[in-house]
Length: 330
Ligand SMILES: [Zn+2]
Ligand SMILES: [Zn+2]
Image (cartoon, rainbow, N blue to C red):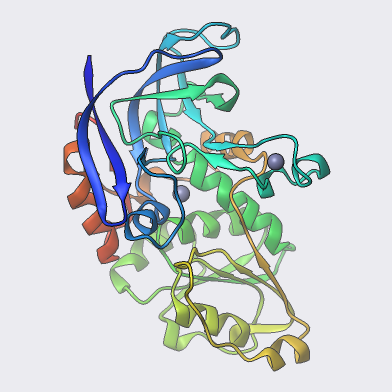
């Protein structure tokens, strides 16, 4: 049976093609993909700004239903609604052996190095699956991976109850981080240049919303950069108060440079952290979405079918959309 998939062939080339569905191998299941989110990383990969292993079917934020079981799959059944944790760790390297598996030297990810979810069907190793609770639909399921990444961002931020928190960037990631920061007890100011995004930010709990030019200096206990914009990185050390914690969450193109003043880091004793993927945070992400602590449905601005994926990526790159969902046969 030929099925549709979006195959990343080389930089600049995403090819929509009919492929034969592979049989699940030992320990694998075949899922019928019901929803897959477009992430900034997908766009970076197509433009050659983030590494991947082509040819590969992109899409690492997806949910679906199990339609076939490979040999030896014992923990999941046909018809179950699941999501995939896309990150496969080697279990053997220095980092895996020292409790930092997400920093694995041999990390491979579904939708980046191995075929992912921008397809009608996808193969997933059983060990990467998580069940969706009955009250979560597939589109909410497609948010589990980005929420899991944001939970890592919150761990890095170390918010204390009552902290003044600035989130720079009001896209889907910024609005997930915002809700997590609120849940952690922070008072959250969102900095977002596109005013049409302010209403949604207010609806999901922002205490204050400002345009980047209005962001005060020396004010915030915690600053999370969530836009991937150079100016936001540069602002992060200025808007931080003394002793602040800063997380650079946004993903920048490989090779991109920014200009910051290291004296600020010294004088204000700033702690600047990165945040990479989602170490053991998928289960918590499912819990937070399922219990309504993080509301993801309002973050969806568009739906496209798999055939329209090029249009969907162009819209993503325009910066005017929020979360774009690919529903294979929409
Ligand atoms: Zn992503
Ligand atoms: Zn490893």
